[in-house]
Length: 417
Image (cartoon, rainbow, N blue to C red; front, side, top):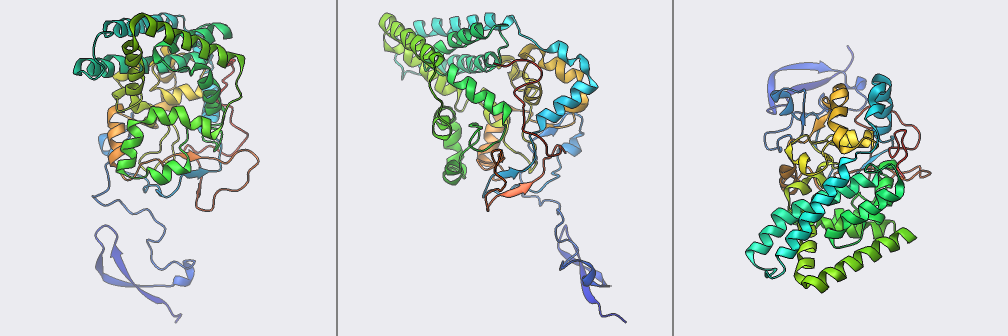
């Protein structure tokens, strides 16, 4: 009789040995020392609850983890293309009428005009109020933070040339929307953002990605709280360190218009109106309910390798439907007013993947959960680099896309610049 090992069976859920013994030939198991080696064991009760949901899933399905947590020591390094190009091709094939949703949205300019007017009126009304008074701080957070966050996303929308047909008209409208923000950035943002679409997750190119120094310094509750509180500064300063832009004439125009506006505002109303506007911008990108979208969009959750998440809740009405983020990356030439129609047209592509149920809870869960942090981002090496960092984890894309050509998510058949 062939010599076999005696293996005692263990119940993996409670680690108690069963009463039975069986004989197993471990020479047939490739070096394994147990039957559970390499398998995903059901998570213990002390694991954080699942934070994302699938719209078509049941309550029971949405409560269960299907993947182990990500390794917090490094980013998730992928060797596959981003998911949006291939899904866009699939949707175009399944629903060719989707092209009718593309094109500029005339309503955008009027919304921008209204919000800019609101902010200028609030700044003028507070010109005689102390910036450290409860009233000033409350209005700057509740009204100013919400309004300037709306203007952030107006500039995001206009960056894709979705307010007018012409390029110059869109650029000048973005500069107009920039005025209440207090700091010139609309021209700089456009180049960085289009690179974010075209090369999603590419290290050193996509400046939306945290750097390794951020991961090392902020990978705990205190660090994540600091990041969420000052995340607007990270998004403003990080691109200059990672991938500085060469100044152009448009940069000069943006800076010139903003400086003249700020100077006139101070001349007419003193420094308090300008303080209000800049404070509003800070609150808009800090611990504000709408600011949850910064983290919700591309951080990895629940151990999944899904790179982009949508949010379909009521805060979209204040944020140009940016919560429809998978839809936006799939078709950046579809304006904010028609993104819900895109989802309704292709529910088999969008309602079957995880999404976030709440932006405010995204911030809270990001801070308190050990399973998510600055490490929870998918990265790729730039084109031409064949290896990944030694500490990195190589993986395949969760969406099932095969490796292919360089991503072109900045284009869906329409001109974006």
